[in-house]
Length: 185
Image 1: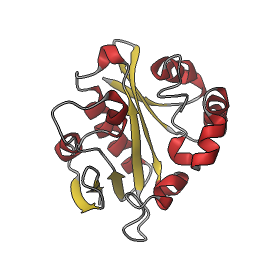
Image 2 (image 1 turned 90 degrees about the vertical axis):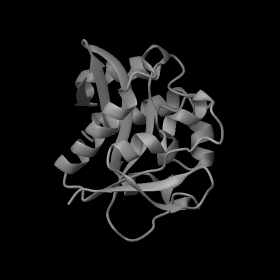
Image 3 (image 1 turned 60 degrees about the horizontal axis):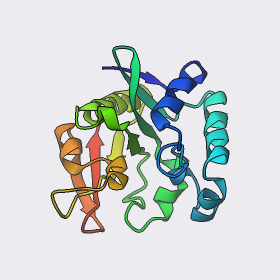
Image 4 (image 1 turned 135 degrees about the horizontal axis):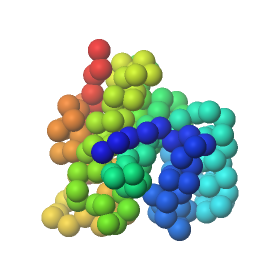
């Protein structure tokens, strides 16, 4: 799989991965960047416009994965301070004052699920963070209580995927949400 940062040049590929609803419920991966109120007010086109503004500013909000030239998935990764919701959450608030990068979500269109896309994107996100000077990367996957996981919960990834990429659980503030880290030094 080829992986590229999202830029103006591949914005249409980002939109293709997001699908007609903009990910889940018009998110366009703005959920962790906004308060609950802002998110509710911006669902749909407003979130799309906000994400486009981030891309147009030159900031890389995440990576797109390609197979045979077709976009097959997205991972959002960046410095933790870009995601205010992480700071405010009892589950994901900082463990310490280290400058960490965060992997906050994955979007894998249905035809490409269960084929290793998310795992490949996670490995690429870690390498991208490393290339940008990150010393630690965090993830906040969901640990299913049963065998079946609704698709709505899979956007955070799963612990086994993070473990296979070298992450270790460093805290657990919720039964189903381990706080995982990977040291890059």
